Length: 260
Image 1 (spheres, rainbow, N blue to C red):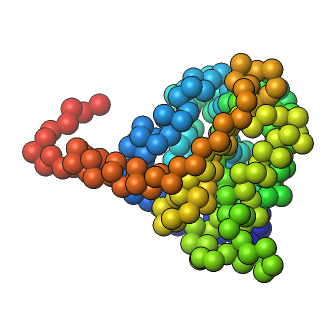
Image 2 (tube, rainbow, N blue to C red):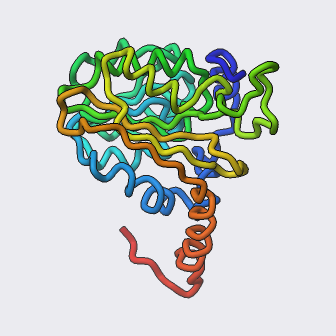
């Protein structure tokens, strides 16, 4: 089970020489993954005044969300990730980065977060950490605030007697987390889970991941919950990557790019 201590140890020792870009290769690169996978899902919530990014790592997505806000607060469990983001974005006056304990957001002001986002990070957390973050968001979101949280959905596949999975946990997903649990955590915290997309990710053929959208009751994003199963997620990834490769700048060796 990838608990907080295990995550801290793993990502503190991880080789970040590629800044996490290696995880976007199946999409044809970070820019292509942002435009093809994330922007269609996040576009309705952007731009936003103050954005909270939970577990930014070395800033793979920070580059993009910085352009969409007046203030960015990044919070990560791993000290090396926090320091890397501080260095990488040192010239960005409206960005700040902080280390936390993997479950709390005490450095984030209450009631000021217009958009909270976490992508390809909290999938490695168990249900206790996710529950804690949801309760923290209940305090941190602005009245019109909304959150987009990528988390694990492995729990439905565990054997009810042994607790074991019928397949290898190759993606280091939290085995105790599910879409249904996230919805319950929101209700317990006084929030609304208004949308969930369960999907297969990378090597998986079952719906092991979930994108959940959370907001406050009475906000303009409040609505009856909508749930979608997306078993074609990996197929979408497979169709995007070859196109990205076809049009990549390095595929035109004779092309001279204008200097900036």
